[in-house]
Length: 156
Image (cartoon, rainbow, N blue to C red):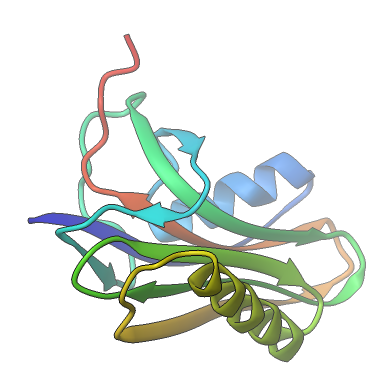
């Protein structure tokens, strides 16, 4: 059975890209080239929420992901979340980000509801997880929640 790992991370650094890289490092997916896909979970796949990603292959490989990301340089809060709904067949992810974790959660729940209504699939379970980060306004702060689709693959 294939596994999708849902991981979270927060990073702070002097530049926007460096804070994103630090958040990826906190989730242990910083050494891959991330390739974003829309949001369909293939049938016969488990979704497992973990603290950090396990070793998913050699550095530089391509890693397929669904990603929620929020970055700020201001003082305040950022939130990035993913929700997923699965059943005996395919499932769905929905991502959202913003400044308020509850608003992000509500956006994810609304998106999942809409996505279910577009499909004639059976959905039995729904989960939502958000990552929040408090920023002090010094440098940049990024929060990520990422679904990593199994093992990485060579980019060439």
